[in-house]
Image 1 (cartoon, rainbow, N blue to C red):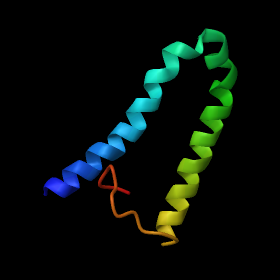
Image 2 (tube, rainbow, N blue to C red; image 1 turned 90 degrees about the vertical axis):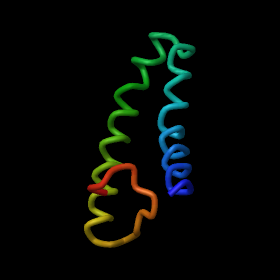
Image 3 (cartoon, rainbow, N blue to C red; image 1 turned 60 degrees about the vertical axis):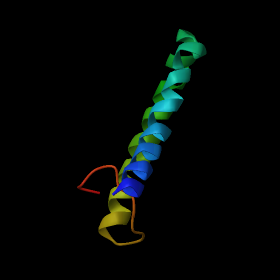
Length: 67
């Protein structure tokens, strides 16, 4: 159980830590790259859903129960 919590904590940290750099980017840079970041996020999310349904890979450490 401890090993699972450690992996989940690491996965959550990998999501949260990059967002801590946003205040250092500046407003202009943030809004400049926001459309591209949003598009890539949408693309990879749809790709991951498709890949999971077609069993292209198995996620051994999912962050949510529906993955």
